[in-house]
Amino acid sequence: MLSPAAAAAVRAAAGSPRAVRCVHARLLREGLTHLHPAPALLVSAYTRSGLLPDARQVFDDAPRRDLYLYSSLLAAVAHSPTPALALPLLRRMLSVDSLRPDHFVLASLASAAARLRSLRLGRQLHAHFAVSPYSGDDVVKSSLIDMYCKCGVPKDALKVFDSIGVKNSVVWTTLVSGYASNGYADEALELFWSMPARSLFTWTALISGLVKAGNNASAVVLFVEMRRDGVRIDDAFVLATVIGGSADLAALVLGKQLHGFAMKLGFLSSMIIGNALVDMYSKCSDIHSAREVFEGVTVRDVISWTTILVGEAQHGQVEEVLSLFDRMVHSGFKPNEVTFVGLIYACSHAGLVQKGRQLFESMKLEYGIKPGLQHYTCYLDLLSRSGHLSEAEELIRTMPYEPDEASWGALLSACKKHNDAQMCLRVADNLLELRPKDPSTYILLSNVYAVNCKWDSVARVRKIMAEMEIRKKPGYSWIQAGKEFQLFHAGEVPLDIREEITRFLEELVSEMRKRGYVPDTSSVMHDLEQHEKEQHLFLHSERLAVAFGILKTPPGSVIRIVKNLRVCGDCHTVMKLISEIAQRKIIVRDASRFHHFEGGKCSCSEFW
Image (cartoon, rainbow, N blue to C red; front, side, top):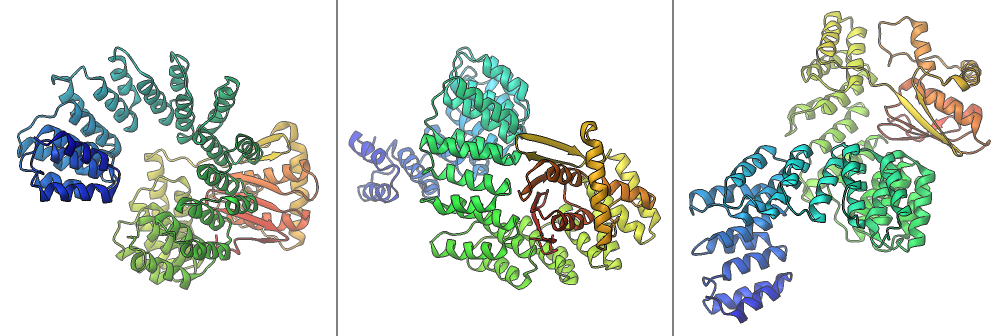
């Protein structure tokens, strides 16, 4: 048995890699590492010091492995970046050491299943737990609730929750958050208001869950309710979460108010608030304010640099992106996977093929980052957009990942743009085999086949759309003019402003035609008459929104529009012309990037 003094020394060393290694070395010199509970204490100390491989080595070297030792390692593995390692440990425990899991082990395994989003494993553990001697353990039940919520079945979590006699705030909060983050906002709110007591932690969990599920407006309303309830905000996380919600809503005025509130509470020195504000201003089309906030953040991490870098990339500011990357590296920060997505994306949308190649290669050679499918798709997009179609096709066939809808779609769009009919058909056939889920992909496919008179393929596209019940996603745009917020759907003009909007658009079209405008109907389904196609384009949601913006905002002010889909080629041309005719700067955030239209030009320089 290890002496109390030696055990205390191991516990005291936990958290410090150097200290725990020194204690371990001393135990080895004195021949004490085999004494109970030295292996378990060392495993725990190593894992708390962030040294999981060392902990695993101690575990493997232990002369005898008991439940205490397994529990120590499994708890660490379950919360590590590699929770899947818990599965071979479980098999080893059952088959090699003939041990049955106790409540500590079951709780750790349930946490691992939650991290892995493995509902099958979670249900197996629950079944074993239900017939075990520990079936009444509330800690395991709490872990099962978290597992079911993270696996997307909060109703099963509710059944476990109902079996707990005395429910503490942790299980209440886990269940409320689980319902909210899985899109069950009404049920989450009902549970929340039925709680015996609510703390800042509970409010934060609910608001965060709503934002995660995309219920941003509800999250903002709840934040206001929390303030009315007099809850003291002494943690920056909830404020950062609501700022994130305003970013997703593209609600610039709300974001500015939250910025002021953060200043009032003294949170501007908080890194997570700074990062959230940079992201918010970027997504709300105010990249200049995003830069100002970033430069004012005194303590930065890799997320800070990546957030501003990706924001600049989406706004088409490639020179700023590359300058930021150089500053980031010179400041001693190692870029991560997301950083390189932003870098290659920026090069793709600026036509910087050679620079993009260099960055893609440096990922592997200089930074040891294995490119993922998203990196290959961005690189593929870079090559194909710039006309390197053969190289792009070779890449998609040789890359170490199975190409997905986004990969084939990027190549097909580029083939269509560069008028390579033969490659268009080859790529289209590969894309159609995937039975894609994005409705806009089917419109692209249908038009590609129609232009090339492949009517059998057009019919096949229509058949697949019918079988999969694919419907074209309705386009909509929204704009905030002063305190007035207006949403426009494609083809629909609100009755109270219909005459004013349509008359103004007709005047704009007349002036545009004088300047050489000819409608580009290639993005509209091929089986419509020409005048029907032009009328379809005339009522695209972003045009309705920009007309509203010009009519309802002061001359010279910036018009900011958010669209749920990608801007079509014709609307892109129209926005450039309107910016010149009306002498207004128009910023459009679409599903792909930001477009800054000013003086008849766009920031994307036609690489979009």
